[in-house]
Image (cartoon, rainbow, N blue to C red; front, side):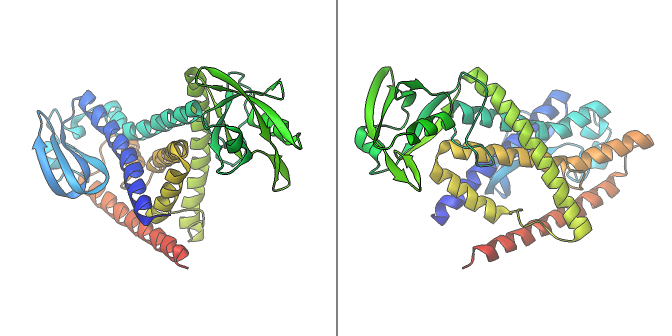
Amino acid sequence: MSIFIAIISFIVVVGILVLVHELGHFFAARWAGVAVEEFGFGFPPRLFAKKGKKTLISVNWIPLGGFVKIKGIAGDDHSIEVHQTATDSFANQSYTKRFLILFAGILMNMLFSWVLLTGVYALGFSESVNGQALETSVADGTVSINLVLEGSPAETAGIQPGDQILSIDGKNVSSIRAAQSAISANVESTQITVLRHTQTVTLSVPVIQIEEVHGIGVGLAVKYPTWVSLWLGLRESLKLLGLIFVGLAALVKGIFVDGQVSEGVVGPVGIAVISGQAVQLGVVYVLYFAALLSANLAIFNLLPLPALDGGRLLFLLIERVQGKPVNHKTGAIVHGIGFACLLLLAALITLRDVIHLVP
């Protein structure tokens, strides 16, 4: 795999996810009447900037997502003392509005994960997150060819990627497993009827033995109509969020209780490698990986750690309980220390990724 492909894939995928997150904060702040002083594409140093009606739009040199600078947020606003009493300041808003502004980025990543997974089911995906063939009780799914191996019996017979399988040996198929079973039941050849665009085509395809299983050299995927894809995407995104929440809870426990980071955790280098692999597999795999990352980003930001949205929400909860805001200088120091710790953790995980990649 090309290092260039891995780097570009990482920048594009992570950049889009971070931008989606920051757009959540941006739109929520504008809805609440809070000033957004700057919306940055990428991270400083600044390349150039243009002043809009209410917000400075900047383009920066480090192309990893973006950021929003909201007026009056402790730790981000160095003029917070001046801005605390301003009507368009975050610090001067109701508890509910501040909560929604802080939570909006997390919500956007959750919703984006749903959107991406909807695309996965609509385009057709051959495997679920655990590597098992997709099976569902929904009858509206169609089994399609998403891959034809070069030099395979399927290619010789004229099978093409995108062909929708209508029947195999005269029997309708409604799942990947049913199609695989129908093909493997033959020893010499199988009759496959496919829908290609608007034309129905029946092909006789030789069957060969592939790793002790009779096959024809194709990859299969299940496609669903939009309304079904929306439901399946929602179901899968909720499942992912639950699994990630449990996994991140275990990560935090491992760091603070056991003093170690799980081997399954990867940093920017590991994500770049996986991004490059997903690109090589195809657009559906990129969408699935991006959905997984978006769900990870949502749950990670929900953790009550300093410098994360969850940490700021925790400070908001403390304010609610004690009846007064946490001192903004204390908040700025805590978030600064938290951010430094997160950078250190990311650096250590990255170093481990690099060591693992070195032969």
